[in-house]
Image (cartoon, rainbow over all chains, first blue to last red; front, side, top):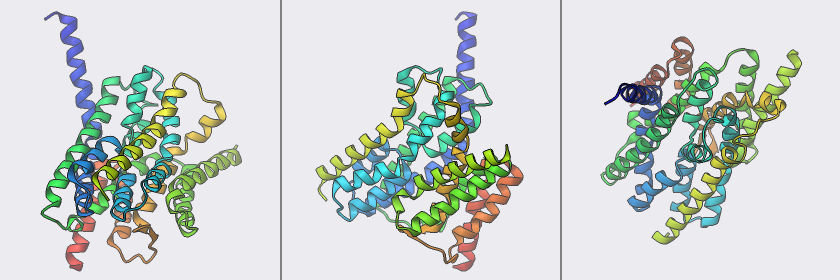
Amino acid sequence: MSTPDTHSQSSWWRDIFRGIGITLPVLAVYVAVGMAYGVLAVDSGIPPWLAVLMSAMVYAGTAQLVGVQMIALSSPPLSIIITAAVINARFFVMASALVPYLRHLTWWQRLLYGVQMTDATFALHISRLPHANASRTEIFTTNVAGHIVWIGATIAGVVVGQTANNLEAFAIDFAMPAMFIGLLVPLVRGRSQLLVALAAGAGTLVFHAAGLAFWAILLATLTGLVIGWGADRWAK
Amino acid sequence: MGEVTILVTILGMSAVTLLIKMSPLVLLGNRKLPRGVEDIMKHLPVAVLSAMVVQLLMVKDGALNLTFDDALVWAALPTVVTAVVTRNLFASIAVGMGFVAVVRLIAG
């Protein structure tokens, strides 16, 4: 083996390990929540292979949990698909925010990035990419690992699901909120961002109270953006 | 619901979700966003994460639950404190889930 070859190989492995290291807490949560989703899906009467297929092809926790419940209620397929689109509309705004930091990728790499983007990997990358020189290998290690673990956890969940289990006992329903709090807090630096967090949080309650359950996340997010923009202008 | 109907539903969910996630990255990929848009977008991570947290804690089975009788809502406090002090994602998740587990164990 020639020297440059060995060198690039070792840096390749280093980037993979770094990617896994950064993603590890998120992967732990995906194991817990992916399993919980798998259990719920089979409990709702969805064939195990279709529950796993949904994790592979939709790969968006909230939309999957709502989708499974709507399937269990025999809602019309079109209404389930539209609900998924509304719940996931936030990803359009999030993907747009990542554009400046993924410019070095080719178009098909960006396409692949979009397929595997989640709330958590978005949060990891939006706080890391502007400051660190992350390699493509590291970026995609995070995304691929998340996707694989999510599918694997779902498989584990549908297997466990048939024996039925009380997941609340293990506090698994707090795994997702705890992860989002852990990702959110370090991003709140300064008064205007605290204001954004409070506005988006309060907005979620208001839009739910107004009966806009499926729109709440998107509308509350946009409210937070407007308040943040206003606060910045005020401070100037 | 029949297996085929569920399959079609999942394929539809997948199609709309992928379209939403991919289109900005593929269509805007090489273009520079206007300054104003970037100024607004810098608040996005905080806004979307905060909205998700509140939804996960205060909404149960699609309806607002403001009774504060759930260990989940209270667990947010030690989790936030841990996150502020340690800035460590693992520690925040562990303390939060540990709190919920202990409270439920005590409350039976």
